[in-house]
Structures are given as structure tokens and as C-alpha cells.
Image (cartoon, rainbow, N blue to C red):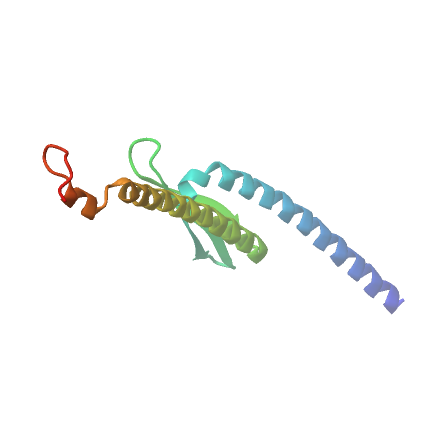
Length: 138
């Protein structure tokens, strides 16, 4: 009989854990959808912060919204699950990496443009040989 009780307890806890995992997945889908909507804002700003409450730490993503013309600080609640926080941090790092790549590509384009302009310029020795009338001195 004692074995039967422990078997029931483990089954209940496994079921509860499965339910928590499904709820966690659903919560992550909601958080991910919202973060992807905010991607243009989160590429340059936003931070994940912890707030200690009575029982545990709650995590949230804080960012500033300028869409109304004034700066408004907003918060996206992540919850207390460390797995969700880690996934949100990885997605935020992914957004920052994309922004960094965009800036690097833009910078490389500007540098290539300057190099091409320098290559198109006549050489200094060619300029010294030309006279004001266009004839070449020898």
C-alpha cells in the first residue's frame, strides 16, 4: 500500500509538471510574439530586470516607447520562470546582433565608397604633368 501511494504522488507531480511545461510554452509564445512586435525598439534598447516581491523574484523587460511623441517607460512581464527569462535574454541578444550587423554593413559600404572615390582620382604624378591648357610638359 505504501508503494501505491508513492506511485500516485509521482504520477500527480509528473502530470503537474507537464501542465506547467505546457503553460510555460504558451507563456513563451505570447512573450516571443510581443518581443517580435517590438523588435525595432528592442534592437537598440531594453533591459531585463528583476523585481523582488514577497515570495520570489519576478522578471520583466523594460523599454522606452517614443511612439506618442513623448518618452514613456513600458514593461513586458516575463514571470518568475528562469527558463522564460533565459529565452527572452537570448532573443534580445539576437535582436542586438542583427542591429550590429546592419551597422557594420552600412559602415563597410561607406568605406568601400570612399576607396572607390580614391581609386577614381587621378594620380598625383599625372596632375603635376598637366598644364593649365591641358598640354603635357616634358
